[in-house]
Amino acid sequence: MIAIENIVVVGTELAIAWADGKESYLDFERLRRACPCASCQGEPDAAGTVVKPKVTYNEKSFFLARYQAIGGYALQFHFGDGHGTGIYSFAYLRQLGGI
Ligand SMILES: [Zn+2]
Image (cartoon, rainbow, N blue to C red; front, side, top):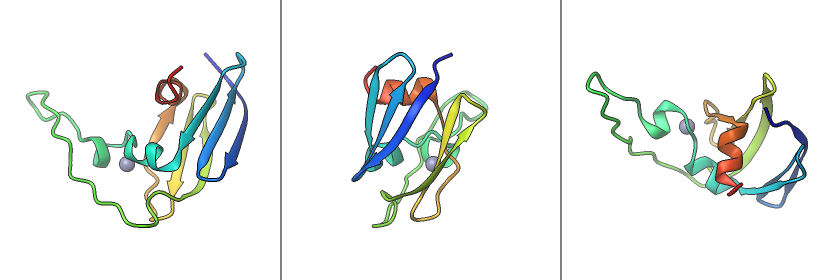
């Protein structure tokens, strides 16, 4: 399990320093569009088909209001429009950052 050494907000990006020395720079807009929660990405129906919902954003959607660590394996982001149900696992964050 990879750990996070440090998290810094730089402008409109979140910079994450990982314990293995790698770094991720994740733009808030990119983070929001990649939100893994069911209302953003959809849920499989009885047949296992996932239909991606139509998500609407406003000017506050791509503002990161705050974040919190979840159990040492994920981060939860709260965006300026009040959306905050997405739990981003460290593995997912690294994948988003191209690691
Ligand atoms: Zn979401």
